[in-house]
Length: 81
Image: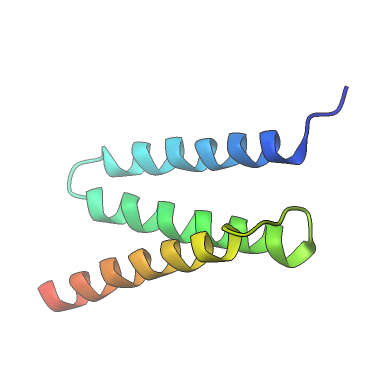
């Protein structure tokens, strides 16, 4: 029995979140974990939208939100250095 694409997409986003959480829990890298999560989810959701595998009213705003938050993390990192 095949799972619906929404189920697979949510499971993959949760997998990305677990990997980012593991990265964030290493000493000295919480911002890197948040950045990895934001970029990975933005790329994955963008890929889903670009290929037509998933769609919806809030898909592209979610991609832009994750990219925006990742950009803010990069800017904060650049400002702190």
